[in-house]
Every structure is written in C-alpha cells, then in structure tokens.
Length: 258
Image 1 (spheres, rainbow, N blue to C red):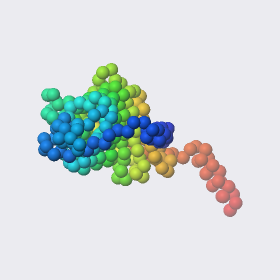
Image 2: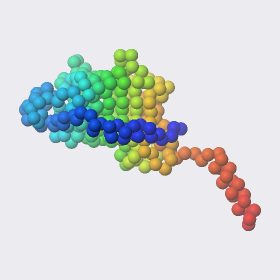
Image 3: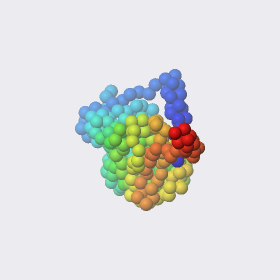
Image 4: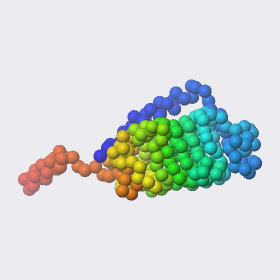
C-alpha cells in the first residue's frame, strides 16, 4: 500500500507565494449577451474582449459555451451548471484542444459535448459532481488530473475512449486525489472509460498521489482493466507485526499478574 505524501502540496504553497511577484493575469467573465454561446464573439464577454492566453476565465451562468482550441495558458473556471463544448458536439470535426490550459470544473458543470478531447499539455481539476462528455479522451504531452473528493466520495467521470497520442505514455501524466473531505474507507471509482487501452502496470508509471488523508489510512490508485475504471481505495492499515508481538507480550504479562 502507498502512503500519503505531501511534497506536491508544499510545492503548490510555495508556488502560490511566488506568483504574486510576477505579471497578473486578467480576469474575464462570460456574460453571454449575444445568446449565441460563441467563445470567439467578443460581445459575449465583459469588457467586450475575447480572453487571451494567460487570462483567468469565469463561466458561471449555466451557459454552454462553444470553443475549439486554446493556444496558451488559460485558466478556465466552470461553475453554476455551465459547460465548455465543441461547436459540433460530434466526432466529425468536434474537437477541443486544451494546449497548456487549466480547466477547473465545478459540481454540476461539464467539459466537452460528446467531443474528441485533445488534452495536449492541459490540466483538469475535478470536484465531486463535475462531469466530462467525451467520445475520445486523448493524452498528449504532459497532462495532470486532480480529483477533489467530497464527504460522500466522488461521482465517477465518464471519459469515453482512452487514447495515447503524439508519443505520450502514462509516464507523462499525473493523477492526484485530494481526500481532505472524505473520511471513509473503501473503493471509489474516479473515471470510467469505454475501452481497455492500458494495463494497471502502464497506469502505475504515472505520478500518483493521494493528499490529506487523516487517521493514517493506506491508499492505492489503480487502473481496473477488467471494469475499465480508474479507482482509489482507502483502507485502515494492517497492524505491524511488531505491534502485534507487543500486544501479545502485554496480554501474557497481564495474565501472569493475575
């Protein structure tokens, strides 16, 4: 069993302390005033300007915004039942390419519309209750996937057919689970795929971490090739052999004292 590790969390804290010293990204909010849901229509954004690479983008009003490709480091925040989809919602030309973009998907919000998701260097952050609607989910470049559990666990993400493109392997990906709110034990399905493209041995070459586990629980992140699922398992650690020997010696001592 793997144990909780914290280096990534400490690195994130250190990074947050450094970032304010650099250039500040603009905050751009979707207002959807043109009612055409087109990302590239400047009138749909506050300030009447389409976001540019590096901007923090907020889509919060429940709109289904259509887009195709992001060339640069956007941070896109979806909440309030909003979705970011390709314009055709079909594989015939329906492709969303992340580039180096980070997508934060809130509960009740969706990324993709039956599309081909080319993840190409992107990061996706899921909370419990977020969703993906994809025909194909293609790892490409270096990708990061983060899952935030709720107190009740996690609602599985349906990610379509898993592909490895552009020479990418699972070693180019990282999967991190934040278990701060989840106090239970057992197996939670994080993602379900439609095809069996990898083995657990492949998956174990990725960078895997579960953060904020209290009570000393053990954990495992595994790819269940039989059910084509990505699962996280938390369990109460088995007592160490030395501890069992110690308890046995204590019991014997108590018996002799009687």
